[in-house]
Length: 143
Ligand code: RB5
Image (cartoon, rainbow, N blue to C red; front, side, top):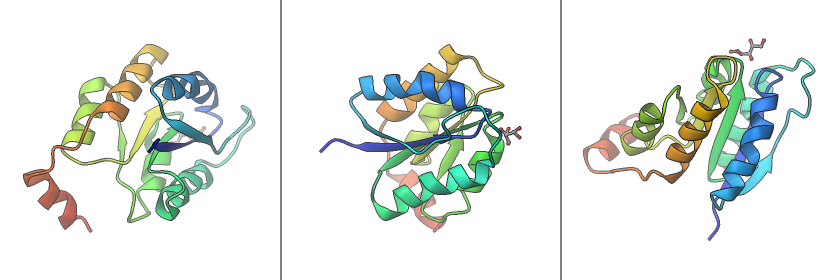
C-alpha cells in the first residue's frame, strides 16, 4: 500500500515545502499538502496541528513540517501524544530519528539549512526503517 505523507509549513517554510513536495512524490509517497500556500504570515501551531490530526486519524502515516527554524512547529506537533516529531539539520540525525526513535514526523528549519541538506534529510528520513529491539521498549515508555 502506498504510504501517505502529510506536509505543512508556515510562511518561513513555504518555499522549501514547495521545493520538497516533488522530491517526496519521486520517492513514491502519496502527498497531502495541508498548506500554507503563500509567504503571508501565519501561525505555525495551526499547521503542526493539521499534520498531527491527519496522522492521528489515519489519513496519513507520516508527516513533514517546516517553519523558519523547525523549532516551533516541532514543539507544537509533539503536543499530540501520537506524534514523535524530530527536528533534523543533517542526514545522520534524520537517520537516527527513524532507527532509534521511530519518529513519524520530520521537521526542518528552512531558514537554517539549505535545500540540498533538506533533501538529504528528507530522503534519509523517509527511506530509513525503525530498528525496533531495545529502541521499541524506549519508544513504548514514552506513551
Ligand atoms: C516565524 O517568523 C518563525 O518564528 C517560525 O517560522 C519558526 O521559526 C518558529 O519556530
